[in-house]
Image (cartoon, rainbow, N blue to C red; front, side, top):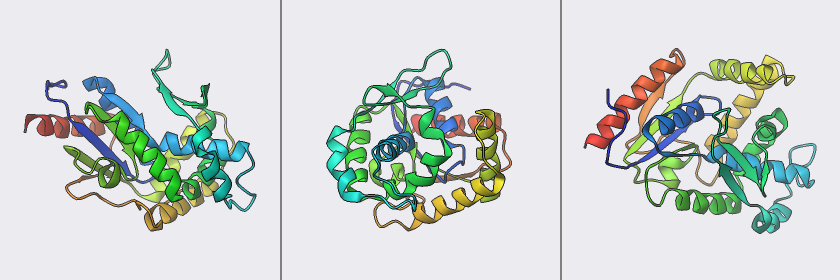
Length: 235
């Protein structure tokens, strides 16, 4: 099976939280020599900034005006993968890849991502990343808002129970404390916020191919995704 083609396209992978879309997108980009952008990491970085600067209350209420005013001071970029093979997220020059994955950020990222001004700023940056194609980007609104004309759109889903199990496993492997119920409740709440927000809600984009990966191995998912990629680049 060929994995690299001369025709460069845009690949948009959307889906629910903890559905494994970032892992799929990152591996596909590595195999075909494309740029990978984790749009969710960008929203997490903004959330981390807001937490650090006291813009999110104990009840998860966001000081929207303060955050909007701070947006020009928030610089987000990505460092090339190092020895660990991970593309690291940089916030104002600081590597925050590990910190943006903890539960505190996970519990607050959806309200931050629902703020129209935050989305407008990050969508513009994401579109700049992909202006020359040859990019794989995952998130919640990549195929609907960021790259509606993407040649390949994938929508990833799995049950909330399965996604919570995956997320808990990741947290425990990082020595972070969490219970299954805490993670499950977070997954369900993020689904609710992501699918009901007023701006760019999570939904399957027109023309997107749905993948329910609840019972698939990573190898099976990648084989499936490479087949779809090769079909898209051959058209």
